[in-house]
Image (cartoon, rainbow, N blue to C red; front, side):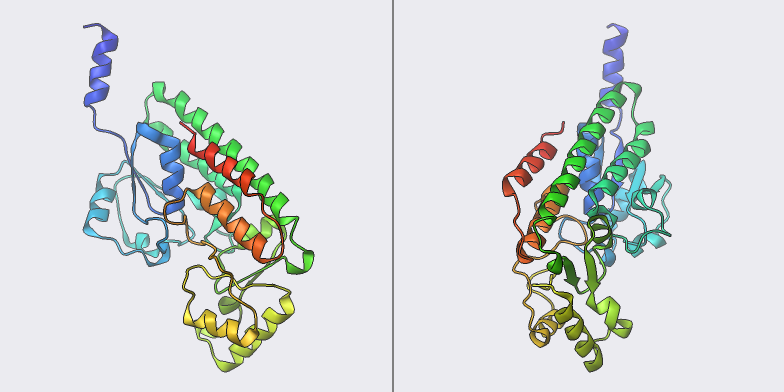
Length: 293
């Protein structure tokens, strides 16, 4: 057997590189970037709330076996603050935007910051791969960042169709600050802004209702459906309807990639606020992301 064949057998027999990606956005980034070059385990499934993560025994086993742990940072998953692992833990979101500059932990709602998260993930995983695998990793990184650049431009185009008076995002909690900052949208997280300690008192409800009516919004956006009892009450008192579709704040929608989730969020916001959304172009972006190999 020649040297090349012997090396191939060694590589085939070697245990796979193992990476744990804690939340759904990082899971999609890592799996798209690494493909078959590593085994990626995800702790928070799409649609679940990373703030409420409770580690199971299998999660702890995955963390103990990992060669790299990817977290968003910015205290998105408080459960991880109490975990000690031997593998490097890389706070990808914090590397994309510093803790001092982050208004909330949901930094991936700006496609440009997702591009930085892709870059930081590639830098973190590259030392775990052999030299022969680096080229494929970097090609996928470039392809991912190109799609994200196009996603950012597409998003800006859709938002241009929304009348200026309606460019406001009303939600219960602060989760879209990076999206609002990137695209010049006013964010109104009503519970975080008006309810002391998260408690909705009659005076808070009155202030929230007045702020919503004055904001110019045509809809209130829920993060899950059916909406919470609190949001239904706010909608009833303010007279502003809850959007028919939710905005996914904490990661990916179930069964969707991060690009599918991002385009769906944009179209939900734009359509509810009186704009027009190019679904055909959104589908093209989704296909480009899915085609990365």
